[in-house]
Every structure is written in C-alpha cells, then in structure tokens.
Length: 412
Image (tube, rainbow, N blue to C red; front, side, top):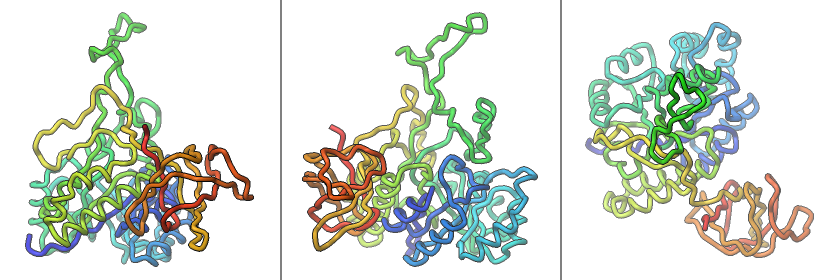
C-alpha cells in the first residue's frame, strides 16, 4: 500500500480503571460494555455514571469509546434497549459493536447517526458479507480471527471505496470456537458464552473415560496429567506490523477485557511504541522486534503464536498445560505522585516489602527499576510490608510517576 494511514490501536476496557489505563498508555480507542448486552459478563463493566466518566476521560485525551452490545439476544433482552442506546448517543459514545441483526435494527432506529461496528461474532469471513453489512449502514467489520492476512487483503480490496473499515485482533487470547460462537460452556455449565457468561471449558483438563469403567480415567497424554485438547496459544502480532498495515487493516484490536491493568498497560504501551516506530522509521522498528515482543508479554500470558493470520500452519494448541507464563508479579498501581517530596501513593495488588527491587511501567516515559526503601501507611506509620489487597502505601521513588503507572517485580 502507498502511504498507508497509521492504524488505530484499540484496547480493552473491562472497567473504568482499565479504560483510563489504556488511554493513558497510548490507546487511540477503547471498547467497553454496559452491565448488559456485552460478551464479558464476568468483568465489572460500566454503569451509567461510569460510562459518562469514561467517555469524558477518553474524549478529553483524544481517544474514542466503543460500546459492545454483541450478545445474541433473546426476546427479553430488547426491553429497554432503545432507551439504553439513546443514552449512549447522548453521552457521546463513538460507536456500537453489534452482532445480532435484531440489535442492529434496533440501534439503527434508536440512534441513526451512531456508527455501528459488526462484531467478530457475526463471522465476518468474506467480502460479500462485509459489503452486505456496509450497505445496511455499518461503518466497520471486525473480522473473524480465522482469516489469513491474504484473505483480509482480498476483503479490503473488494470493499475499497465503500468507506468500510476493517478491524482485526492482533493480540490476546484465542478461542477454540469459530469466531467465539461456542456452545460448550452452556452445555457443560449452563453459562451461555453467546450471552457473555463463558466458563472457559476449553481450558479444562480432560481425560478419556470408557463407558464400562466410569470411575477409571485414562490419560490421553503419556505424562498422566490428562490433556488440554482445546487449549489455544495466545495471539501476538507485534513482529508483523508492516504485514498488518499492508493487508488494509484500519484498527488493531487487543483482546482482554477481563485481564489486569498491568496487562492492559504493558500490551498497549508495547504496540503504541511499535506502531509509532514503524511510521517514524521502518528500520528502527525492525531493529527492536525482540524488545517489542518482550515488552508486550511482561504480564502473564500463554505461549504465543501468530494465530491464523500468517497462514503458515503454525501449531495453535497447547496440549500439556493450561497455566499462564508468569515472569512478573503485578504489585500495585500509582494513585498519586508528589513532586516536591518525590513520594508516590501506591495501591497494593500483591505483596511487596522494603528491600525488594521493583520496576515501574510509565505512561509518560521509559520505565525504570529501583530498590524499595521504607514504606508507610496512610497515617504515616512505617510498615514492614504491604500485604493487604488494595492497601495504600507511600514510598519514595527515584523518578517522576503519574497516576495509573504500574509497579511490578520480576519473579526469581
């Protein structure tokens, strides 16, 4: 492509804290959900007041907010839906993410000026369906994760000149079901993945049981621990920014509305730097590929792959384990910083103590490490350790910090 536009970096916002973290660490847009209609029912999501605050925060920093309403709806789900969409329009939400045609029709009537993005749940796998949604008024198609970059380029070329934008997942967890449309959770646990309640049975450990021996489980793998026959690797495309851009992708989407602020901050910052470096100087980007990969994966993650995008047949499953790779502990979030005294208030997420060597992930600059000195409670009492969740402590730091910066520690 000649002189391509810089793609949008789209980050997950499972709650208001993660929304602010994503925006501060460099996201151009975030996707969130209200208490209903979104496909992540087990995250906090947003009440009306939080949506108002989140939209104002993002817009004040030049970022957009997209709200997911991408369940496959039952009749009862339409009660109050038009009023909800009009509320989202009134507060300035930038787009709705929708998969159900009934919800699409409702949104078009309730908020006709609101841009609509067609969710990956709609199985957007070909140019004809993409153009079908465009003719109905959709602005963007979120493409199926099962497509290769070659197939995406074909959709882009076929829709060129129509104004349709293409969005693709570039990082995060992959799903065993086609475009996430899975019945396994509902069948096994009664929790419907297509209405935001997935219990993730694809991550369970399975063994083989013979009908006449119901109490005797036969291991599928030789190690005797069972088998994770549906456990997928995580997606990481940070080493392939040029290929993503040349395929015509307008928005790079990061998965992870139920992940931690540490995950959101680290992944967003890594992709922000990689995209900006590539547009500044492609040779600079090429020289830092290992660095980007390491920085995008400092939070807990599974083994990484390029998913289906490269079309090279790389293995996508992990059969012997479902645990995360954890090289660092997420210790805390900076709540305030006092320049005069050089002290920071930090909300504790995991235990830390004087003498620990920690690292800071900063939204406003490069990270740094330091050894913790004395730490103090909110009343000025010196503490031997910070060991209570959400406990706020005060400590001196060696460089300037901002609210929502992240403190973490390498696991020995």
